Image (cartoon, rainbow, N blue to C red; front, side, top):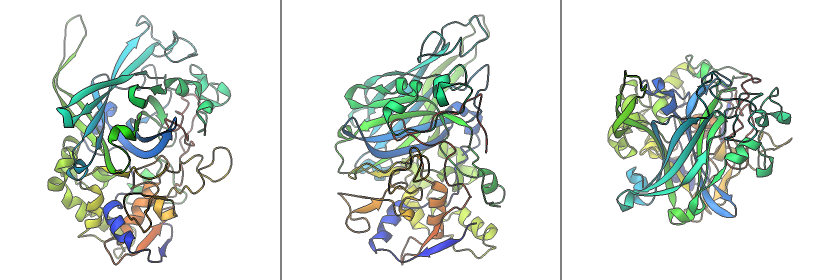
Length: 490
């Protein structure tokens, strides 16, 4: 493990802030959180994001959900796609629902798959795709976004529909790639909408009410050395980005804060996937299976790492099926007495490490209930670009992948924070693309956040400090999908 430095005691207000917001004793997100959901990749959630930005002059809550992890780019003839039989939902809790772990509003993504022709072995591409949905894009997915207001007897409002761009194959999808050439690697992130690749730009969709949506393949923006972390915590330097070179599928939704009742509040965000209760398999010539019954939740995701790093194997599948409203009764024990803290002390520090192993009320403060809490009253957060402060598309000035541990803060209009309203600029005040949740998490775990406050900053824990592709600074923010013809796994 890289050396850690002890930071001088900060403003006393930090103790209360961190108790409410910071912590996680997990190291990383392998996207393999629970046994059963690993068997259902199209419904397997990876990461949830939530942060404040401005879109078209309007203050918005940007939310995103990744699914279908570990996509090897360019696989064929069948491709990775959203599943028409999965209900994908991003949930937002407002007011008293945040503490109760109840969704106030739910945003449902539902997909429909069609083909230009099935009388071919060319499942996805009949030629070079010039524009999304054109005659060369054989497999075409459309989607609808529906708002469900649980305060009004689950009142449903259709916000609109969109078109999923093709996966990045290479020569069939040249405009994703450098020089608009399918032989080249994928384009890096950009700072303006005009510079987005053609397919992504066409797929960004304005919905009614000022909402903006995107659904499609992206590079997996999570970065960490998963192999060494789960190999008895035998960390190495430099580390290897385990998700480097892999893709996933992303749904992103920009929500006007006016739709949430304004920005003078803290909201909670999490996501779920569900399948119909019964699947009927047919053995007749129609070759059509049916899904019947009510929707049954099969996965959920809030803050990174909770089910994976804290919840014991006996309860991991239960977590996937339950609601944050049940977290206090079912999972608080895992947050307050994290087994991983003991393992870190044992395996990394030889049995006498600094991680507190019991009575972690600070850990429970962030995870119970497991929602990403976000202060909407701040200005737009700083965004990651290429992972450095120089070159093309650098990180925003003042951005730190370590968030508050790197001095990246925002100013709240509704709470004192460290004093003067100073609050974290990234996770665990929301979560941005580029937040190094591994180093932030370990810093929180090794610190004593209960008071008297002791902060230890763990910088470069796993030897991976940025994503292999740079992020966009415009919607949908996550990196361009890797080229199936020309990419590399670090």
